[in-house]
Image (cartoon, rainbow over all chains, first blue to last red; front, side):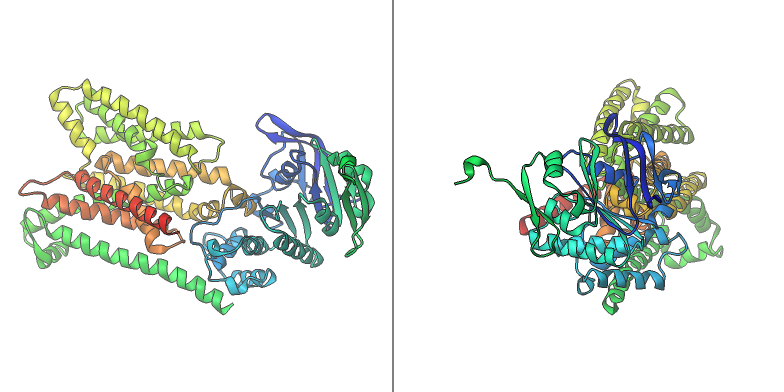
Length: 265
Length: 339
Protein backbone atom coordinates (compact mmCIF):
# COMPACT_ATOMS: atom_id res chain seq x y z
CA UNK A 1 0.00 0.00 0.00
CA UNK A 2 1.46 3.37 -0.98
CA UNK A 3 1.39 6.09 1.63
CA UNK A 4 -0.94 9.04 1.10
CA UNK A 5 0.11 12.66 0.83
CA UNK A 6 -0.37 13.22 4.56
CA UNK A 7 0.78 10.64 7.07
CA UNK A 8 0.90 10.68 10.85
CA UNK A 9 3.57 8.33 12.11
CA UNK A 10 3.41 7.07 15.66
CA UNK A 11 2.82 10.59 16.95
CA UNK A 12 2.22 11.96 20.42
CA UNK A 13 0.21 15.15 20.08
CA UNK A 14 -1.16 17.45 22.74
CA UNK A 15 -1.17 20.86 24.32
CA UNK A 16 1.74 21.77 26.54
CA UNK A 17 2.39 18.69 28.66
CA UNK A 18 -1.06 17.20 28.21
CA UNK A 19 -0.95 14.52 25.53
CA UNK A 20 -4.29 14.01 23.75
CA UNK A 21 -3.12 11.36 21.32
CA UNK A 22 -0.27 8.93 21.96
CA UNK A 23 1.34 6.71 19.36
CA UNK A 24 -1.21 7.77 16.78
CA UNK A 25 -0.74 6.63 13.19
CA UNK A 26 -3.03 7.84 10.40
CA UNK A 27 -2.71 7.72 6.64
CA UNK A 28 -4.77 10.24 4.66
CA UNK A 29 -5.53 8.64 1.27
CA UNK A 30 -4.98 10.73 -1.85
CA UNK A 31 -8.04 11.96 -3.74
CA UNK A 32 -10.52 11.02 -1.00
CA UNK A 33 -12.88 13.13 1.08
CA UNK A 34 -11.78 12.00 4.52
CA UNK A 35 -13.96 12.85 7.50
CA UNK A 36 -12.64 12.52 11.04
CA UNK A 37 -15.35 12.01 13.62
CA UNK A 38 -15.85 10.96 17.17
CA UNK A 39 -17.29 12.22 20.46
CA UNK A 40 -16.14 15.47 22.04
CA UNK A 41 -12.55 15.42 23.30
CA UNK A 42 -11.70 12.33 21.26
CA UNK A 43 -8.74 14.09 19.67
CA UNK A 44 -10.22 14.70 16.22
CA UNK A 45 -9.46 18.43 16.17
CA UNK A 46 -6.06 17.71 17.69
CA UNK A 47 -5.33 15.34 14.83
CA UNK A 48 -6.42 17.94 12.28
CA UNK A 49 -4.22 20.57 13.93
CA UNK A 50 -1.27 18.20 13.75
CA UNK A 51 -1.99 17.56 10.06
CA UNK A 52 -2.09 21.35 9.55
CA UNK A 53 1.29 21.75 11.38
CA UNK A 54 -0.39 23.95 14.01
CA UNK A 55 0.67 21.45 16.66
CA UNK A 56 4.06 19.81 16.57
CA UNK A 57 4.10 16.21 17.78
CA UNK A 58 6.30 15.75 20.86
CA UNK A 59 7.14 12.30 19.53
CA UNK A 60 6.67 10.78 16.09
CA UNK A 61 6.23 12.68 12.86
CA UNK A 62 3.73 14.13 10.43
CA UNK A 63 4.77 13.61 6.83
CA UNK A 64 3.66 15.71 3.87
CA UNK A 65 4.61 14.03 0.59
CA UNK A 66 6.89 11.71 2.51
CA UNK A 67 8.89 14.45 4.28
CA UNK A 68 8.52 15.78 7.82
CA UNK A 69 6.08 18.67 7.56
CA UNK A 70 7.97 20.71 10.16
CA UNK A 71 11.24 20.47 8.22
CA UNK A 72 9.70 21.99 5.09
CA UNK A 73 9.47 25.77 4.56
CA UNK A 74 6.06 26.82 5.84
CA UNK A 75 5.25 28.77 2.69
CA UNK A 76 6.04 25.74 0.54
CA UNK A 77 3.69 23.70 2.74
CA UNK A 78 1.04 26.41 2.28
CA UNK A 79 1.18 25.87 -1.46
CA UNK A 80 0.33 22.17 -0.95
CA UNK A 81 -2.01 22.32 2.02
CA UNK A 82 -4.84 24.76 2.72
CA UNK A 83 -6.53 25.14 6.11
CA UNK A 84 -9.93 26.43 7.12
CA UNK A 85 -9.70 26.79 10.91
CA UNK A 86 -12.64 26.53 13.27
CA UNK A 87 -13.01 30.24 14.00
CA UNK A 88 -11.02 32.45 11.67
CA UNK A 89 -11.14 36.19 12.28
CA UNK A 90 -12.31 38.66 9.66
CA UNK A 91 -10.65 42.05 10.22
CA UNK A 92 -13.17 44.87 10.79
CA UNK A 93 -14.71 46.23 7.62
CA UNK A 94 -12.77 44.00 5.21
CA UNK A 95 -14.47 43.30 1.87
CA UNK A 96 -15.09 39.83 0.47
CA UNK A 97 -12.66 40.34 -2.44
CA UNK A 98 -9.93 41.56 -0.10
CA UNK A 99 -10.37 38.63 2.27
CA UNK A 100 -10.29 36.08 -0.55
CA UNK A 101 -7.17 37.82 -1.90
CA UNK A 102 -5.36 37.00 1.36
CA UNK A 103 -5.30 33.40 0.15
CA UNK A 104 -2.62 34.38 -2.34
CA UNK A 105 -0.08 34.98 0.43
CA UNK A 106 2.06 31.85 -0.14
CA UNK A 107 2.33 32.68 -3.85
CA UNK A 108 3.52 36.23 -3.32
CA UNK A 109 6.79 37.84 -2.32
CA UNK A 110 7.88 41.24 -1.14
CA UNK A 111 8.58 42.34 -4.71
CA UNK A 112 5.77 40.42 -6.37
CA UNK A 113 2.76 41.51 -4.39
CA UNK A 114 -0.08 41.33 -6.85
CA UNK A 115 -0.17 39.86 -10.34
CA UNK A 116 -2.74 39.25 -13.06
CA UNK A 117 -2.51 35.59 -12.07
CA UNK A 118 -3.55 36.48 -8.50
CA UNK A 119 -6.46 38.49 -9.86
CA UNK A 120 -7.61 35.56 -12.01
CA UNK A 121 -7.30 32.95 -9.24
CA UNK A 122 -9.24 35.10 -6.76
CA UNK A 123 -12.04 35.61 -9.31
CA UNK A 124 -12.14 31.85 -9.95
CA UNK A 125 -12.26 31.04 -6.25
CA UNK A 126 -15.19 33.41 -5.78
CA UNK A 127 -16.99 31.95 -8.79
CA UNK A 128 -16.44 28.39 -7.50
CA UNK A 129 -17.99 29.28 -4.15
CA UNK A 130 -20.76 31.34 -5.75
CA UNK A 131 -19.87 34.61 -4.03
CA UNK A 132 -18.81 36.70 -7.04
CA UNK A 133 -21.76 39.07 -6.56
CA UNK A 134 -20.68 39.70 -2.96
CA UNK A 135 -17.13 40.78 -3.95
CA UNK A 136 -17.38 44.38 -2.81
CA UNK A 137 -19.56 43.70 0.25
CA UNK A 138 -18.19 43.84 3.78
CA UNK A 139 -17.63 40.39 5.28
CA UNK A 140 -19.31 41.45 8.54
CA UNK A 141 -22.59 42.17 6.69
CA UNK A 142 -22.91 38.58 5.46
CA UNK A 143 -24.89 35.66 6.85
CA UNK A 144 -23.04 32.77 8.50
CA UNK A 145 -23.41 30.56 5.43
CA UNK A 146 -22.14 33.23 3.05
CA UNK A 147 -19.24 34.00 5.34
CA UNK A 148 -18.20 30.36 5.45
CA UNK A 149 -18.19 30.27 1.64
CA UNK A 150 -15.97 33.38 1.66
CA UNK A 151 -13.48 31.63 3.94
CA UNK A 152 -13.55 28.54 1.73
CA UNK A 153 -12.91 30.82 -1.27
CA UNK A 154 -9.91 32.26 0.54
CA UNK A 155 -8.49 28.78 1.08
CA UNK A 156 -9.25 27.90 -2.57
CA UNK A 157 -7.33 30.99 -3.71
CA UNK A 158 -4.34 29.30 -2.11
CA UNK A 159 -4.61 26.70 -4.94
CA UNK A 160 -3.65 23.70 -2.87
CA UNK A 161 -4.37 20.09 -3.84
CA UNK A 162 -5.00 19.32 -0.13
CA UNK A 163 -7.67 21.01 1.98
CA UNK A 164 -8.14 20.68 5.75
CA UNK A 165 -11.40 21.88 7.27
CA UNK A 166 -11.91 22.06 11.03
CA UNK A 167 -15.62 21.70 11.77
CA UNK A 168 -16.72 23.77 8.76
CA UNK A 169 -20.43 23.36 9.58
CA UNK A 170 -20.49 23.94 13.33
CA UNK A 171 -22.05 27.39 13.55
CA UNK A 172 -24.41 27.04 10.58
CA UNK A 173 -28.09 26.16 10.35
CA UNK A 174 -29.01 22.92 8.57
CA UNK A 175 -29.53 24.48 5.12
CA UNK A 176 -26.14 26.12 5.14
CA UNK A 177 -24.52 23.00 6.57
CA UNK A 178 -25.71 21.05 3.54
CA UNK A 179 -24.68 23.90 1.25
CA UNK A 180 -21.13 23.87 2.62
CA UNK A 181 -20.91 20.07 2.47
CA UNK A 182 -22.19 20.06 -1.13
CA UNK A 183 -19.46 22.57 -1.93
CA UNK A 184 -16.89 20.29 -0.27
CA UNK A 185 -18.18 17.34 -2.29
CA UNK A 186 -17.82 19.39 -5.47
CA UNK A 187 -14.23 20.35 -4.57
CA UNK A 188 -13.51 16.68 -3.97
CA UNK A 189 -15.00 15.67 -7.34
CA UNK A 190 -12.75 18.25 -8.98
CA UNK A 191 -9.79 16.22 -7.75
CA UNK A 192 -8.78 17.70 -4.40
CA UNK A 193 -7.99 15.67 -1.33
CA UNK A 194 -10.18 16.87 1.56
CA UNK A 195 -9.91 16.22 5.27
CA UNK A 196 -12.69 17.56 7.49
CA UNK A 197 -13.65 17.22 11.11
CA UNK A 198 -17.42 16.88 11.40
CA UNK A 199 -19.81 16.44 14.31
CA UNK A 200 -22.78 14.95 12.55
CA UNK A 201 -22.48 11.21 12.02
CA UNK A 202 -25.09 11.03 9.26
CA UNK A 203 -23.61 13.94 7.34
CA UNK A 204 -20.21 12.29 7.64
CA UNK A 205 -21.58 8.98 6.36
CA UNK A 206 -23.27 10.72 3.43
CA UNK A 207 -20.44 12.94 2.22
CA UNK A 208 -17.22 11.20 3.21
CA UNK A 209 -15.52 8.68 0.93
CA UNK A 210 -13.21 7.71 3.77
CA UNK A 211 -14.03 7.82 7.49
CA UNK A 212 -11.72 7.91 10.48
CA UNK A 213 -13.58 7.26 13.75
CA UNK A 214 -11.73 8.25 16.91
CA UNK A 215 -12.16 7.81 20.61
CA UNK A 216 -9.86 8.68 23.51
CA UNK A 217 -7.09 9.78 21.17
CA UNK A 218 -7.10 6.55 19.19
CA UNK A 219 -8.43 5.50 15.81
CA UNK A 220 -11.21 2.99 16.41
CA UNK A 221 -12.26 2.34 12.84
CA UNK A 222 -11.20 3.50 9.42
CA UNK A 223 -12.54 2.91 5.92
CA UNK A 224 -15.39 3.58 3.52
CA UNK A 225 -18.61 4.61 5.30
CA UNK A 226 -20.52 1.65 3.87
CA UNK A 227 -17.99 -0.70 5.47
CA UNK A 228 -17.45 0.83 8.87
CA UNK A 229 -20.69 2.56 9.83
CA UNK A 230 -22.22 -0.36 11.68
CA UNK A 231 -24.24 -0.54 14.86
CA UNK A 232 -21.20 -2.06 16.57
CA UNK A 233 -18.79 0.69 15.60
CA UNK A 234 -21.25 3.43 16.53
CA UNK A 235 -21.69 1.85 19.95
CA UNK A 236 -17.93 1.50 20.31
CA UNK A 237 -17.22 5.10 19.34
CA UNK A 238 -20.19 7.01 20.72
CA UNK A 239 -21.73 4.62 23.31
CA UNK A 240 -24.91 5.00 21.31
CA UNK A 241 -27.24 2.05 20.75
CA UNK A 242 -28.58 2.42 17.21
CA UNK A 243 -29.88 0.80 14.07
CA UNK A 244 -28.37 1.42 10.65
CA UNK A 245 -30.63 1.79 7.63
CA UNK A 246 -29.97 2.87 4.05
CA UNK A 247 -30.30 6.62 3.48
CA UNK A 248 -33.34 6.79 1.14
CA UNK A 249 -31.70 9.67 -0.75
CA UNK A 250 -28.18 8.37 -1.30
CA UNK A 251 -28.08 4.77 -0.16
CA UNK A 252 -25.32 5.60 2.33
CA UNK A 253 -25.64 4.31 5.91
CA UNK A 254 -28.03 6.28 8.10
CA UNK A 255 -27.73 6.01 11.85
CA UNK A 256 -31.01 5.83 13.74
CA UNK A 257 -30.48 6.10 17.51
CA UNK A 258 -32.54 3.60 19.46
CA UNK A 259 -35.32 4.95 21.59
CA UNK A 260 -35.16 4.14 25.29
CA UNK A 261 -37.45 1.29 26.23
CA UNK A 262 -39.36 3.60 28.56
CA UNK A 263 -39.98 6.08 25.74
CA UNK A 264 -41.41 3.43 23.44
CA UNK A 265 -45.17 3.28 23.69
CA UNK B 1 -14.64 40.02 -12.07
CA UNK B 2 -14.97 43.62 -13.24
CA UNK B 3 -16.53 44.40 -9.92
CA UNK B 4 -13.68 42.69 -8.08
CA UNK B 5 -11.13 44.69 -10.02
CA UNK B 6 -13.05 47.91 -9.32
CA UNK B 7 -13.33 46.95 -5.66
CA UNK B 8 -9.71 46.16 -5.00
CA UNK B 9 -8.39 49.11 -7.00
CA UNK B 10 -10.79 51.46 -5.28
CA UNK B 11 -9.46 50.34 -1.90
CA UNK B 12 -5.86 50.65 -2.90
CA UNK B 13 -6.68 54.07 -4.37
CA UNK B 14 -8.02 55.09 -1.00
CA UNK B 15 -4.80 54.10 0.76
CA UNK B 16 -2.64 55.83 -1.85
CA UNK B 17 -4.82 58.95 -1.65
CA UNK B 18 -4.57 58.98 2.16
CA UNK B 19 -0.78 58.59 2.06
CA UNK B 20 -0.37 61.29 -0.59
CA UNK B 21 -2.67 63.66 1.27
CA UNK B 22 -0.97 63.08 4.63
CA UNK B 23 2.48 63.55 3.04
CA UNK B 24 1.38 66.84 1.45
CA UNK B 25 0.07 68.12 4.78
CA UNK B 26 3.27 66.96 6.47
CA UNK B 27 5.48 68.86 4.01
CA UNK B 28 3.35 71.98 4.45
CA UNK B 29 3.49 71.75 8.25
CA UNK B 30 7.24 71.09 8.18
CA UNK B 31 7.90 74.11 5.95
CA UNK B 32 5.66 76.30 8.02
CA UNK B 33 7.26 75.08 11.21
CA UNK B 34 10.73 75.84 9.80
CA UNK B 35 9.65 79.39 9.03
CA UNK B 36 8.01 80.18 12.37
CA UNK B 37 9.36 80.49 15.89
CA UNK B 38 10.79 83.26 18.00
CA UNK B 39 12.19 84.79 14.80
CA UNK B 40 9.63 84.56 12.01
CA UNK B 41 11.45 83.94 8.76
CA UNK B 42 8.47 83.66 6.44
CA UNK B 43 8.36 81.37 3.44
CA UNK B 44 10.72 83.35 1.17
CA UNK B 45 13.52 83.72 3.72
CA UNK B 46 13.14 80.08 4.81
CA UNK B 47 13.35 78.98 1.20
CA UNK B 48 16.41 81.16 0.55
CA UNK B 49 18.16 79.82 3.64
CA UNK B 50 17.28 76.26 2.62
CA UNK B 51 18.90 76.81 -0.77
CA UNK B 52 21.98 78.36 0.86
CA UNK B 53 21.11 81.80 -0.49
CA UNK B 54 19.95 83.45 2.72
CA UNK B 55 21.75 85.71 5.20
CA UNK B 56 24.20 84.16 7.67
CA UNK B 57 21.79 84.74 10.54
CA UNK B 58 18.86 83.15 8.75
CA UNK B 59 20.95 80.17 7.77
CA UNK B 60 22.15 79.67 11.33
CA UNK B 61 18.60 79.76 12.65
CA UNK B 62 17.42 77.32 10.01
CA UNK B 63 20.30 74.85 9.75
CA UNK B 64 21.55 74.82 13.33
CA UNK B 65 18.43 75.42 15.36
CA UNK B 66 15.25 74.59 13.49
CA UNK B 67 16.09 71.82 11.03
CA UNK B 68 17.72 69.51 13.60
CA UNK B 69 14.69 69.94 15.83
CA UNK B 70 12.30 69.49 12.91
CA UNK B 71 14.13 66.41 11.62
CA UNK B 72 14.22 64.91 15.12
CA UNK B 73 10.50 65.57 15.49
CA UNK B 74 9.66 63.99 12.14
CA UNK B 75 11.75 60.89 12.82
CA UNK B 76 10.55 60.55 16.42
CA UNK B 77 6.90 60.86 15.34
CA UNK B 78 7.37 58.35 12.53
CA UNK B 79 9.08 55.88 14.91
CA UNK B 80 6.22 56.23 17.39
CA UNK B 81 3.55 55.88 14.69
CA UNK B 82 5.24 52.78 13.35
CA UNK B 83 5.76 51.21 16.75
CA UNK B 84 2.15 51.94 17.74
CA UNK B 85 0.90 50.30 14.54
CA UNK B 86 3.07 47.26 15.22
CA UNK B 87 1.80 46.91 18.79
CA UNK B 88 -1.83 47.31 17.77
CA UNK B 89 -1.37 44.72 15.08
CA UNK B 90 0.35 42.31 17.48
CA UNK B 91 -2.22 42.66 20.23
CA UNK B 92 -5.18 43.08 17.89
CA UNK B 93 -6.27 45.57 20.50
CA UNK B 94 -6.88 49.32 20.08
CA UNK B 95 -5.05 49.92 23.37
CA UNK B 96 -1.91 48.13 22.25
CA UNK B 97 0.70 50.87 22.39
CA UNK B 98 4.10 51.36 24.04
CA UNK B 99 2.46 53.78 26.55
CA UNK B 100 -0.02 51.20 27.79
CA UNK B 101 2.36 48.23 27.58
CA UNK B 102 4.97 49.76 29.85
CA UNK B 103 7.76 50.42 27.37
CA UNK B 104 7.52 54.16 27.88
CA UNK B 105 7.64 53.65 31.65
CA UNK B 106 10.66 51.41 31.19
CA UNK B 107 12.39 54.14 29.21
CA UNK B 108 11.51 56.59 31.99
CA UNK B 109 13.08 54.33 34.62
CA UNK B 110 16.26 54.21 32.54
CA UNK B 111 16.33 57.96 32.11
CA UNK B 112 15.71 58.55 35.83
CA UNK B 113 18.58 56.26 36.75
CA UNK B 114 20.84 58.22 34.40
CA UNK B 115 19.67 61.56 35.80
CA UNK B 116 20.23 60.46 39.41
CA UNK B 117 23.48 58.52 39.00
CA UNK B 118 25.31 60.46 36.29
CA UNK B 119 25.85 64.02 35.14
CA UNK B 120 22.74 63.44 33.03
CA UNK B 121 24.06 64.51 29.65
CA UNK B 122 21.45 64.20 26.92
CA UNK B 123 23.36 61.31 25.32
CA UNK B 124 23.69 59.32 28.51
CA UNK B 125 20.04 59.86 29.45
CA UNK B 126 19.05 58.77 25.96
CA UNK B 127 21.18 55.65 26.17
CA UNK B 128 19.75 54.63 29.55
CA UNK B 129 16.20 55.34 28.35
CA UNK B 130 16.72 53.15 25.29
CA UNK B 131 18.04 50.37 27.52
CA UNK B 132 15.03 50.73 29.81
CA UNK B 133 12.56 50.44 26.93
CA UNK B 134 14.36 47.45 25.42
CA UNK B 135 14.57 45.66 28.77
CA UNK B 136 10.83 46.18 29.27
CA UNK B 137 10.13 44.82 25.79
CA UNK B 138 12.22 41.78 26.67
CA UNK B 139 10.36 41.23 29.96
CA UNK B 140 6.97 41.49 28.27
CA UNK B 141 8.10 39.06 25.60
CA UNK B 142 9.38 36.61 28.20
CA UNK B 143 6.11 36.81 30.15
CA UNK B 144 3.89 36.17 27.12
CA UNK B 145 6.21 33.73 25.41
CA UNK B 146 4.53 30.87 23.67
CA UNK B 147 1.12 32.43 24.14
CA UNK B 148 -0.97 34.27 21.62
CA UNK B 149 -0.23 37.99 22.20
CA UNK B 150 -3.57 39.08 20.77
CA UNK B 151 -6.62 39.82 22.81
CA UNK B 152 -6.07 40.92 26.36
CA UNK B 153 -3.12 38.79 27.42
CA UNK B 154 -0.24 40.98 26.26
CA UNK B 155 -2.13 44.14 27.14
CA UNK B 156 -2.80 42.94 30.70
CA UNK B 157 0.79 41.81 31.18
CA UNK B 158 1.89 45.20 29.84
CA UNK B 159 -0.43 47.09 32.17
CA UNK B 160 1.00 45.10 35.08
CA UNK B 161 4.57 45.85 34.04
CA UNK B 162 3.67 49.52 33.53
CA UNK B 163 2.19 49.71 37.03
CA UNK B 164 5.29 48.19 38.61
CA UNK B 165 7.54 50.56 36.71
CA UNK B 166 5.39 53.56 37.63
CA UNK B 167 6.03 52.61 41.26
CA UNK B 168 9.75 52.29 40.62
CA UNK B 169 9.78 55.67 38.89
CA UNK B 170 7.93 57.29 41.78
CA UNK B 171 10.48 55.86 44.21
CA UNK B 172 13.41 57.06 42.05
CA UNK B 173 11.95 60.57 41.96
CA UNK B 174 11.79 60.72 45.76
CA UNK B 175 15.51 59.89 45.87
CA UNK B 176 16.56 62.95 43.88
CA UNK B 177 17.61 66.46 44.85
CA UNK B 178 15.70 69.48 43.57
CA UNK B 179 17.86 70.07 40.50
CA UNK B 180 17.67 66.47 39.37
CA UNK B 181 13.97 66.28 40.14
CA UNK B 182 13.35 69.29 37.91
CA UNK B 183 15.41 67.73 35.13
CA UNK B 184 13.56 64.45 35.57
CA UNK B 185 10.14 66.03 35.40
CA UNK B 186 11.19 67.94 32.31
CA UNK B 187 12.40 64.73 30.68
CA UNK B 188 9.18 62.94 31.71
CA UNK B 189 7.09 65.50 29.88
CA UNK B 190 8.93 64.94 26.64
CA UNK B 191 10.50 67.75 24.68
CA UNK B 192 12.22 68.46 21.40
CA UNK B 193 13.89 71.76 22.27
CA UNK B 194 17.65 71.97 21.75
CA UNK B 195 17.93 68.76 19.74
CA UNK B 196 20.97 68.68 17.44
CA UNK B 197 21.89 66.84 14.25
CA UNK B 198 23.54 64.02 16.19
CA UNK B 199 20.24 63.13 17.84
CA UNK B 200 18.33 63.61 14.62
CA UNK B 201 20.70 61.16 12.96
CA UNK B 202 20.28 58.55 15.70
CA UNK B 203 16.49 58.49 15.41
CA UNK B 204 16.65 58.63 11.62
CA UNK B 205 18.84 55.50 11.57
CA UNK B 206 16.45 53.69 13.94
CA UNK B 207 13.54 54.75 11.74
CA UNK B 208 15.24 53.58 8.55
CA UNK B 209 15.98 50.18 10.09
CA UNK B 210 12.39 49.99 11.36
CA UNK B 211 10.98 50.76 7.91
CA UNK B 212 13.06 48.00 6.31
CA UNK B 213 11.95 45.43 8.92
CA UNK B 214 8.30 46.46 8.62
CA UNK B 215 8.47 46.21 4.81
CA UNK B 216 9.40 42.56 5.22
CA UNK B 217 6.91 41.89 8.04
CA UNK B 218 3.84 43.76 6.92
CA UNK B 219 2.28 41.04 4.76
CA UNK B 220 2.77 38.41 7.42
CA UNK B 221 1.32 40.74 10.05
CA UNK B 222 -1.61 41.41 7.76
CA UNK B 223 -2.25 37.67 7.47
CA UNK B 224 -1.99 37.36 11.28
CA UNK B 225 -5.01 39.62 11.56
CA UNK B 226 -7.04 36.60 10.34
CA UNK B 227 -6.01 34.72 13.48
CA UNK B 228 -3.10 32.46 14.30
CA UNK B 229 -4.63 29.38 12.65
CA UNK B 230 -5.38 31.04 9.32
CA UNK B 231 -1.97 32.69 9.26
CA UNK B 232 -0.29 29.33 9.83
CA UNK B 233 -2.41 27.85 7.06
CA UNK B 234 -1.30 30.62 4.71
CA UNK B 235 2.34 29.85 5.42
CA UNK B 236 3.19 32.67 7.82
CA UNK B 237 5.99 31.95 10.26
CA UNK B 238 3.81 32.97 13.21
CA UNK B 239 6.28 33.01 16.10
CA UNK B 240 9.10 34.47 14.02
CA UNK B 241 6.88 37.25 12.70
CA UNK B 242 5.60 38.11 16.17
CA UNK B 243 8.99 38.13 17.87
CA UNK B 244 10.54 40.23 15.09
CA UNK B 245 7.62 42.67 15.26
CA UNK B 246 7.89 42.95 19.04
CA UNK B 247 11.64 43.56 18.85
CA UNK B 248 11.22 46.12 16.04
CA UNK B 249 8.46 47.94 17.94
CA UNK B 250 10.59 48.02 21.11
CA UNK B 251 13.64 49.35 19.27
CA UNK B 252 11.53 52.02 17.55
CA UNK B 253 10.06 53.09 20.89
CA UNK B 254 13.49 53.08 22.52
CA UNK B 255 14.94 55.23 19.74
CA UNK B 256 12.12 57.75 19.81
CA UNK B 257 11.67 58.01 23.57
CA UNK B 258 15.38 58.17 24.29
CA UNK B 259 15.73 61.31 22.20
CA UNK B 260 12.43 63.09 22.78
CA UNK B 261 11.20 61.70 26.08
CA UNK B 262 7.84 59.92 26.39
CA UNK B 263 5.74 62.13 24.11
CA UNK B 264 2.33 61.05 25.29
CA UNK B 265 -0.25 59.30 23.12
CA UNK B 266 1.48 59.65 19.74
CA UNK B 267 1.98 55.90 19.35
CA UNK B 268 -1.60 55.27 20.51
CA UNK B 269 -3.34 57.84 18.34
CA UNK B 270 -1.39 57.61 15.05
CA UNK B 271 -2.50 54.10 14.00
CA UNK B 272 -6.12 54.89 14.91
CA UNK B 273 -6.16 58.00 12.77
CA UNK B 274 -4.44 56.10 9.94
CA UNK B 275 -7.01 53.30 10.13
CA UNK B 276 -9.82 55.82 10.01
CA UNK B 277 -8.38 57.26 6.81
CA UNK B 278 -7.87 53.96 5.00
CA UNK B 279 -10.79 51.82 6.20
CA UNK B 280 -10.12 48.11 6.56
CA UNK B 281 -6.66 48.04 4.98
CA UNK B 282 -3.93 48.92 7.44
CA UNK B 283 -0.99 50.92 6.25
CA UNK B 284 2.12 51.03 8.41
CA UNK B 285 3.50 53.77 6.22
CA UNK B 286 0.48 55.97 6.80
CA UNK B 287 0.67 55.43 10.55
CA UNK B 288 4.31 56.57 10.47
CA UNK B 289 3.42 59.68 8.46
CA UNK B 290 0.57 60.53 10.83
CA UNK B 291 2.89 60.07 13.80
CA UNK B 292 5.39 62.47 12.23
CA UNK B 293 2.55 64.89 11.53
CA UNK B 294 1.28 64.81 15.13
CA UNK B 295 4.72 65.42 16.64
CA UNK B 296 5.68 68.15 14.16
CA UNK B 297 2.31 69.87 14.50
CA UNK B 298 2.38 69.58 18.29
CA UNK B 299 5.93 70.94 18.38
CA UNK B 300 4.88 73.92 16.32
CA UNK B 301 2.13 74.67 18.82
CA UNK B 302 4.60 74.10 21.66
CA UNK B 303 7.04 76.61 20.18
CA UNK B 304 4.27 79.17 19.72
CA UNK B 305 3.54 78.48 23.39
CA UNK B 306 1.17 80.19 25.77
CA UNK B 307 1.83 83.92 26.05
CA UNK B 308 5.57 84.31 25.58
CA UNK B 309 6.49 80.99 27.19
CA UNK B 310 7.26 77.96 25.05
CA UNK B 311 5.75 74.66 26.14
CA UNK B 312 7.43 71.26 26.27
CA UNK B 313 6.28 69.28 23.21
CA UNK B 314 4.93 66.47 25.38
CA UNK B 315 2.38 68.77 26.99
CA UNK B 316 0.79 69.43 23.61
CA UNK B 317 0.81 65.81 22.40
CA UNK B 318 -0.64 64.80 25.78
CA UNK B 319 -3.53 67.23 25.61
CA UNK B 320 -4.27 66.57 21.94
CA UNK B 321 -3.88 62.81 22.35
CA UNK B 322 -6.02 62.73 25.49
CA UNK B 323 -8.81 64.62 23.75
CA UNK B 324 -8.54 62.21 20.85
CA UNK B 325 -8.85 59.17 23.10
CA UNK B 326 -11.95 60.58 24.79
CA UNK B 327 -13.46 61.32 21.40
CA UNK B 328 -12.64 57.80 20.23
CA UNK B 329 -14.42 56.25 23.21
CA UNK B 330 -17.47 58.45 22.71
CA UNK B 331 -17.58 57.66 18.97
CA UNK B 332 -17.28 53.94 19.68
CA UNK B 333 -20.08 54.10 22.22
CA UNK B 334 -22.29 55.88 19.73
CA UNK B 335 -21.58 53.16 17.19
CA UNK B 336 -22.44 50.46 19.73
CA UNK B 337 -25.68 52.18 20.68
CA UNK B 338 -26.63 52.54 17.04
CA UNK B 339 -25.99 48.93 16.07
